[in-house]
Image (cartoon, rainbow, N blue to C red; front, side, top):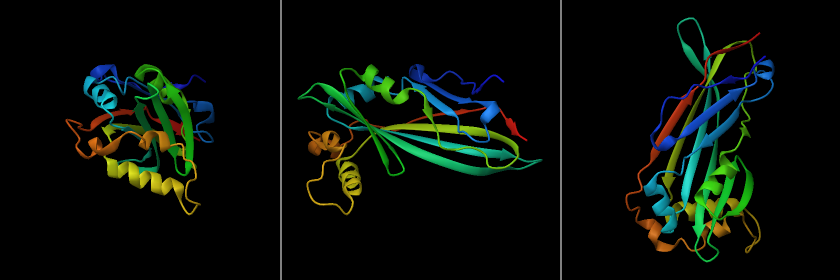
Length: 200
């Protein structure tokens, strides 16, 4: 059976959100999420170049349709952190899903950095009962404050010995006090919804 792909209305800056469902395995495997142009906004790129780390938050909800009502069946969330290192002239990318981190390393351009985290990603969310369902994806893009990065780094270190390396160290380095003043760094919000699919 052909995969089910979410229709996406036109978004500003050419942003694309795709939620692809393998209907033959929808009851045992989550959808594949693909995004593009989330960092295409000129203001976002300017802030990155100025030293602002950018946080991209993905929220995926699974809804079950009833006769009249719709119920939130389950949800999952993951974050991506992007920061420009002027000393190496690289964009560093880290993805966090629960307590798991994926360090993509450095990219020479914003476009290649986004291709790393925007490529097909299997979300850990699927129905566990019969019925009619659909997925609702929201993505938010916003610059991070210095205090946000400090809290994140403290969380990733956990109860470990001081000096333990973290995949986010490169993100924290060089950001400095500039992040305490978010100059024009408003949050961008995008969303997409799939068609309804059935689990027997």
